[in-house]
Length: 352
Image (cartoon, rainbow, N blue to C red; front, side, top):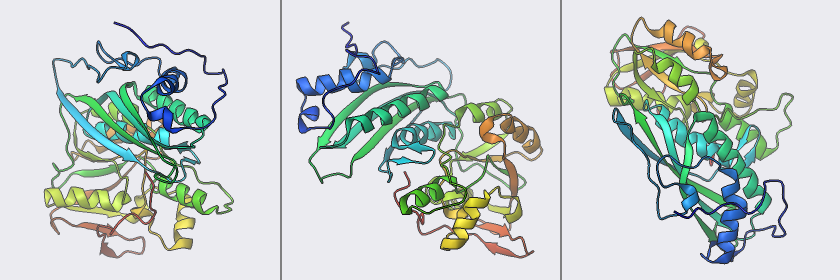
């Protein structure tokens, strides 16, 4: 079987500086783009006999004999494409890896489809692909196949990325199997990603710069899964903590009650949220998870999560009850209680 190998090292410059329509036209220029700009970023690109280097019409993935196959897909149009703490490449990889993770699946392989605007800087594409590759490596996953299309100038805003992911779960975990008595864990501070993007987009001059939390969470969650007792998981992306909890409560027709003073929040996120009149509970995260765990298992699972650098600020923030089926209740810092409703939408657009 013929392998298409890269023709240059990563540190060798190219004369072409921007994407042209020929880069997506299926001929010599497209092959050159694949050889010199894409393949060099992915050294390990097989999850089966046929992988990325064969540039076939697809790829094969070797499936273990035990467990369920979990499949997910995602698209990313974030603005700006480079932001404090990450970029669209890291975001696209982590977003798909994390969707697999919260279903209890070990990520195996991803696909990558690039839709790029004519005139897009090739140096920026290099940065994005290098970031995507490094993020996959953090979770032990590989890129096995992909596609590239070029749109005319003004027909797309720079670049859009679509991915699909495959993982294996010994026991797939949904976001609906919760019941009264269960504990609610969040793996870290909330609202970091959305507020970091907003600050970068609007060029706020903050005393302490905000940084996105975008990261693959599989290495952290794997430690917790090994202990058992996790009944449901979700990553609080668009709509943040509020949307994720409402989805979980609604699917199980249970009540989730959380305590406001136990929710981990960075001071910078809280300050900017108050300044703009935005609830940090509705703002997206890209490196966090919500876990609903059996009563009595929360401290053991919490301790395991905190052993990972991403989980150092994890906390138990509430319980599942049956008081108001399908609703989320928040106990406020001043001693009151109110419903935490499903947001109409994320207050920060184009965060992923």
